[in-house]
Image (cartoon, rainbow, N blue to C red; front, side, top):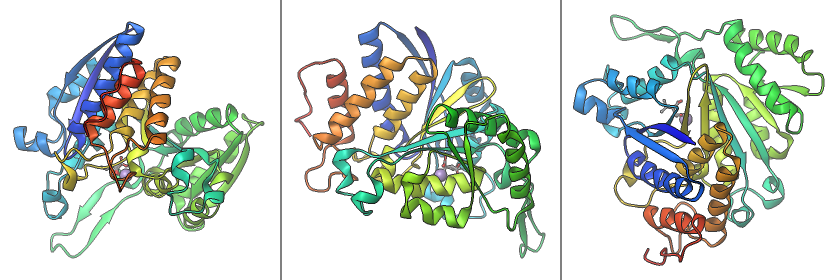
Length: 360
Ligand code: IPM
Ligand code: MN
């Protein structure tokens, strides 16, 4: 198969983890005789620095032209510490999601046997956890009208949802649940928010089309607690944009590190794959960032094109690296490996070659 992949490394550790992800994609291409063509484009703080725009038109063109997009990370402390900045790196990612119509963000949460004992959570609580978050990605408070009063003393962010915005992701979540363990949990705040009540109404109506799926509702505050108390109860979680953002970071603790969480953003035309973690600027260019989330995002990209054996190869290699403790400091505090050597190990494992990972 021939695929045109747009690479948007972005900020902080983004370029380093994307470099490892392409290393792994190249290994897969070699093993299975695929052709993956990359085109790199600017986004985020680096794009602001070079062009004044967090999402230059050229980047948007590169993305529209590609079969899929592999995204690194976005954000820079320079902007985080300056709330008055009008042009912000994150606008690049938000605009990209909106322009490409990437309305569904899919974030799977699993556990790895060899990491379970390292978790802050009890082994019995997390062992066997396997769920997926369907986060709405182009609506809600992220995209509502934003206002700051002239005197700077009052501000508002509007939260809007239309029935259509709810329905299109809800169908995907119901379908996912019907081929998994057949349980869908809608997370909302319907005791307070009008938008949440609309979500409930639409989902209750739609449930009739998916009679095999058991539907449950949780308020988001309770959901945040249940995730830690009993994560095994979940199969598919469906939720709006901001709740999904918050709950997926929380859920990463179950896997062992946010450095492990991959995601796919899908929509009308194209799809974007990105690690759930942020730009982690303190680690930039230190060769310590965990590349696994980006690499697993590349595996999700392959699955999107039905390259299941290829994706499985990547997941097996990742599992092996974790089992052997060939891991970056977030997972291996005593004798850690570098970003590059984790990538090298996976590549060699996939290609079944003599491992070169001993040079840490
Ligand atoms: C994410 C990130 C983004 C979000 C930021 C960088 C805008 O936290 O993808 O989870 O909030 O959606
Ligand atoms: Mn987030």
